[in-house]
Amino acid sequence: MNIKMSSESDCEVQETQESDAAEGRNEEDIITVLVATDIHLGFEEQDPVRDQDTFETFEEILQIAADEQVDFILLGGDLFHHARPTPYCIYKCTELLRKYCLGDKPVEIEFLSDPARNFPTLENPRVNYEDPNLNVSIPVFSIHGNHDDPTGHKQISAIDLLATTGLINYFGKWNSYDYVEIEPILLRKGQTKLALYGLSHIKDERLGRLFLDKKVKMLAPDETADWFNLLVWHQNRATRGVKNFIPDDALPEFLDLVVWGHEHDCRIEPERRANGVFVSQPGSSVATSLAPGEAITKKVGILKVYKKTFMMTPVQLRTVRPFVFHEMVLKELNEMDAEDSGLTYSELTMQMVRDKIESMINEAKGLGRVERVSKKPLIRLNVKYRDEKQVFNAIRFGQSYLERVANPEDTVKCQGIKEPVGRQNKKKNNEAFDMPEILPNRVEDLVLTHFSENDSLTCLPVDPINEAVKKCIDSNDTEAPIIIVNHLIKETLQKLEEAMPEIEQVEAFLADLKASRNRDSANFVNQILNDPRRVRKRVGNNEQESDDNSDADDISAQIDDDDDAPSTSTKPATGPGSRGGRGSRGGRGSNSSRATRATRGRGRGRAK
Image (cartoon, rainbow, N blue to C red):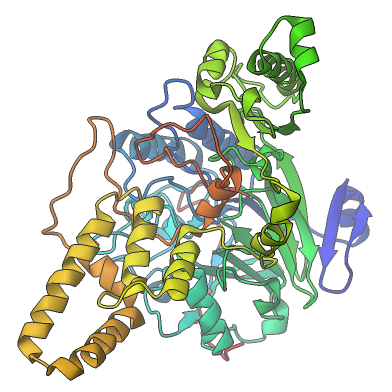
């Protein structure tokens, strides 16, 4: 059974083949697309247990596309986990794309728009299946996400490398922060015409402001009512800090379907929003953090479009490593419990936790996700306690599961439950817990709150330092904060020496200087950190430098997973993948056999 969505009805359940026959549909008029997002190739690549997880699942996705004989694959960003993937990661990705996306199968979709406008970054812009030097059987269209966004002085990403080889069609790249103009890729198959809009990751606060200022335009083709309008982008959907997400109602009403990348929990069945736009959130194909949203079954979608109607069929991924997440609140023990058992409080606690872990391992065995290989499961048990006597060494405890789980070092996380300490402090405690409904859950929100409340900085601007802190967390650029602070100090002293203001004017001079740096903090920080003359330290032989120019807003999933409560399982972590975190996210014929293509047209027209 499939769910049929249309612009006129919420959903109708019907058998696919029967409906096609009853409505006189021809397979030659149906555009079939495999939809996937957040594949994160290279995640935990240095881990001896999980190093092949992303590559195995990516191959499964490409195999599904080949088996379903899709017309093309649509990727919603974060194909790579790092902005600068390792040579091995690029090698494996290229190998798999060549294996599954090149061949003699003819491509039956016509490309009608101007490739120079859809692929402006290419020296010879063209859709890859019209390149006479390539034999593409399954085209791949992809935007970039916040993990694999362009970096460095020339702003080049790993997606650019794949596009240059002709293995994917990279679109939706936008560099201006003053306005956004999205021109669709126009495709046709028989009687079905598809306008494919793409927008690669832009900082959510900036994009939200552009929406409010009505500076986001989506150019529509002529006779727009005849086109199925599909948007793919990579933005925050969940609330993560002040103005740090894009609400569903910001979507233009003329869109028929939005494929929403970046969020890792799978909500792939299309949901109709208040403005009538359907939203499909495929979620990630790999768990990059030990958060509840990552434990939801991973899926990709087979999207079928016929004129102005569509069907989305979820397909469960079978090679995903099983992941079970639970929380456990420990009951308070008394001395009688300990005396009767002959164990200490912590030993009694470990006994209860061990029983729970065993049940979770058995639960993972029953998930039935893994077909090709037998994999150790990911297990995360958040243990909450009230009595400090119940605390135990969670890291040492996890080592007993070294041969049974994939993440023994953080299988268990202990968190204390904070409670009022006495009636005399009741008022004080109530005031302390009288917090706003939405608390800041990103580091930069906490930094801004701290400095706005305490007004601690008198000479240096807060925003550039905040941007540097984000780079440190999101891109593992540990040098970023000190580099930016040192640069700001040097620049401030230099400008003071040049201006030589009177003593009574110094405060106003510094205020103006701070304001000028706060206005364009992101560009200022990127310019300093991406300076090609910058010398970077290497923190280890196998660790990869990451100077990614990303906004990586989804680090909040890691913060959700590791809140402020005390934890005995904390240990220093190094390497670009050590922060976990992104979760609550493929492929590319013969000239003679290729379908006849219509005369190419321009996709420009009136703006929606």
